[in-house]
Amino acid sequence: MELGKVNIPKEVYLDFLGETTQIHWDNHAYLMVFIWIIMVPLCIIAIRYGKPKPTQRGIETKISIMNPRWWWFSIHKFGLYIAIGLSIIGAAIAFIVSQGFSGSLHAFFGIATIILGCLQVISSWFRGKHGGRYYYTGHEDDPSSWEGDHYNMTPKRRKFEAYHKSAGYLVGFFAFGAVGSGLMQFPLPGLAIFVFIVVGAFSALWMFLEFKGKRYDGYRAVFGHGMEHPYNESRKEL
Image (cartoon, rainbow, N blue to C red; front, side):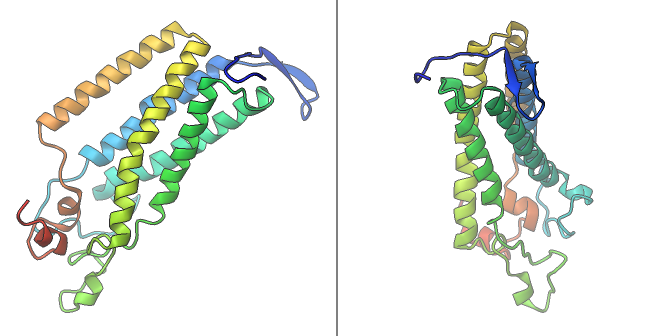
């Protein structure tokens, strides 16, 4: 297939089914819009604006999906796991019914989004140990029990945050490119209008939460705002 040429098949013969089946590209579009225009932004909003207001001792209880104090982290982590998993399934089905890589602009944007999204998940595995002076594993009389990549902001943790937070914007760029190019390639006016409405609504919500001052510093929200915490001490002039 010539690069840039788009041939959108309406049906495909699948060997494992032994029959020709209709391709419903609108379902692919609905799924990907749901994932990247609704699910992913909600997961980002959760961790960006859901953190509790910093206290002296921070969050002392264990990080767990069952712990309501960590709801914002759980939604971000597991929500994005689900989003990437669904995206891989959606992309795989599109690849199968297209009988290979189409070479369209949408395909390039889509593949880049999936790859970068997977790298975001993989990078989260290298965020390091949590630690914390007042975390449930810490003991007041044993400073060694406080140590952790996050609490001490080790080079490992700094590298993770530098990549994970920055690369997230890149994923968003390619995701919007995939959605936009997809709707140009396979027009669905109603869905396009819905995307504009959702983007506008999320933008208004972000502005409101910023205005209300809900974007708390992650380190202070988790470990506390006291100067006894190493990263707070290193930023005391900020």
